[in-house]
Length: 458
Image (cartoon, rainbow, N blue to C red; front, side, top):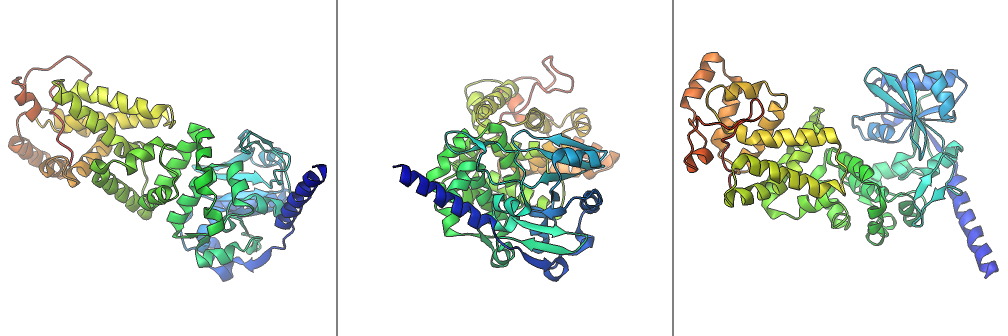
C-alpha cells in the first residue's frame, strides 16, 4: 500500500514537472498583429515603472488574447516577479487587495491596472474537502505562473517595451484554431476552482471557440461543485457572462453543459420560462448591441430585465385577486428579490436600481397633469423608459405608450402640450375600479396611487 502511495505521488510530481518545464515560444507581437498604439497607456507605464524598479513586467491574459483576435480589450492586467508589497511601494496611487490571492490595483484616473505576482504551483495550498483552493499566496516563476492559468489562450505574456510575446502552452495555435483548451488536468483544475466551468461556457460563446473534448468531459460530473462557491463570486461571474457580448449564446452553452439547473437560480428563471423568452431575448440582444458599440451597460437594468417575469407573474396574480396595482407590484418585487437573495448575492445598489425601474412602470402609464414632466427629471427615468420600450417591443403593453414617450422626449414645449392633450386622461386600472382619477392616496412625493393593472404577458 505504501509502495502504491509513493508511486502515485511520484506520478503526480512528474505530471506537474512536465507542465512547468516547458520552453516558451517567442514571437514578435507586431508580427502577430499587436500594435502598441492599441495598448493602454496606463498598462505600458505600469510595465515601464516595474522594469525601472528592477523587475520583470508583462501584459498578460485577456488583454493579449483579445488583441490577437482583433478585439478591443476591456482592461489590461500585468504579471511581474515583484511581490505585492514591492509593487505597492513603486506606485503612489495603488492598493493591495485580496485574501485568497493578493494583487495590487494601480490607478490612473478611472483606469485600474491589476498587477499580480507570478504564482507557484498549488502543491501545498490550503484546500477544502472538494479540492477547492482556499488560500494561495505562494510566489513562483513565470513558467509556473503560466501553468497555473486556466486556458492556453489566456497564458500569453506580452512585453510592450521589447515587443516580445511568450507562449508556454501553444495558446497562439489554439487561438488561430479557435479551440478552448484547459492547461493541465481539467478535472483537477475544476476542483481547485469550480467557477472555471462557468468560464468555459463564457469564453466558448464570447470567442466562438470549440471546447476541446478533454476540457469538456468532466463538467457534467463536477457541476454540483458550484454549490460550494460563495454567492458573491457566482454573481460576479454572472455579470461577466451576461456582459460578454454574446450573452444568449453563453446562456445556451451553460444549459448544454448542464450548468444551469438548480445551480444558478437566475438561469433557471431565464432559460426555463417560455412566457418570458421573447422579453429576455430582446433584452439580451439589446445588451449585446451596446457591448459591441462600446456603450456603457447598467447591471441594474440588465438584472431588472432578467427577473421581470418573476415580478410580472406575481403582480398579475395579486391584481387578479383584487389587490390594488401599486401595492401589488411592491409585494411582487419583494417576493422576487427574496427568492434570489439566498443564492445570488446581488449588490444592494443594483437591487435599488432594479426596484426603481420596476416601480416606475405603472407611473409611465399615467399621462395627466405634471406627472410626465416630473418623470423626465427622475434619476432612473431613462432606464425605466428603455425598459418600457422592451415591454412594448414584445407586445406586453400597447406599443402606443412607448411611441408616446419617445415623441414626448423629443418634442419641444408646444409639442409636449399637444401630446398631453391627446393622451388618455386616466389609467385603465383606476377607471376599472370606479375610482376618480383625481383621488390620490398619501404617499411618497411624486408617487402615483392610481396605476393601471399590469397587462397580460405575451
